[in-house]
Length: 275
Image 1 (tube, one colour):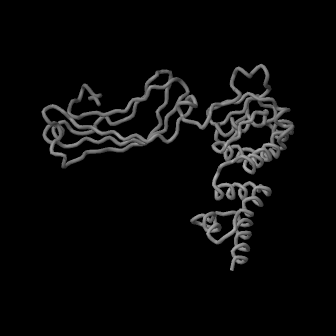
Image 2 (cartoon, rainbow, N blue to C red):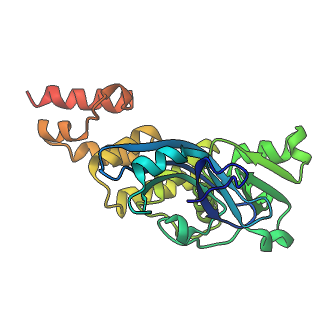
Image 3 (cartoon, rainbow, N blue to C red):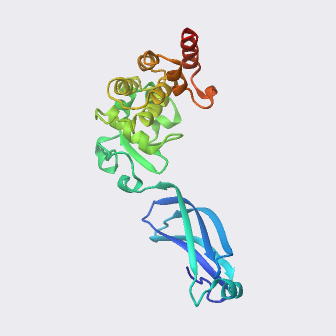
């Protein structure tokens, strides 16, 4: 909390500071409140913004004129003290290590700049860059085969940007593609989403094998994945486990329209059979 306008001391300024390195960003909502001396009044302001580092390690957002000094002194200051409350909701963080972000597990393989000598293309997902081999990805994915080897403008680029995917999901997807045993209950859905988008059948198959043989997910979640990603073996396994109307109720979402139509039809047939 500070008066950030020394030329005009008629207001109290309040700012929130973030300490970051270059290329890091924090997307956040925050509310600043002060309480009157009798606790009967609250003065508050809300803002949502992006903290960015532009060479300096600090960035700040807030209010240059949070409250007028006269009102502050008459209603809020109690013997020179002020009660302040700040609520911060972090929406997204970019460029921070995974241990800070709280990802489910550490990465098993690096695709960072140290892999540049062994790569021939850079794939950029949001702010993160992955150094990979065109032919290796092309051999596993028709999508990448067309992207890298087709007669398109992007095919000749040394850096290609990918859209509509999460960079951490893409990291886990690449790990599996490069032979790591990195599928678990926390990562499988993200890996499936990328593998489905980029038409990578071997990775989809590995995810399905995990869900069938090792996953501890609830039946409802498994059935959702089976329907969303056309995992026939998993779907059959899940449907075989449904043996009563109560089981059917347990896997139906609040809005049945969001469920895969084929799965919903199978459940309807089962329900009829239980009558």
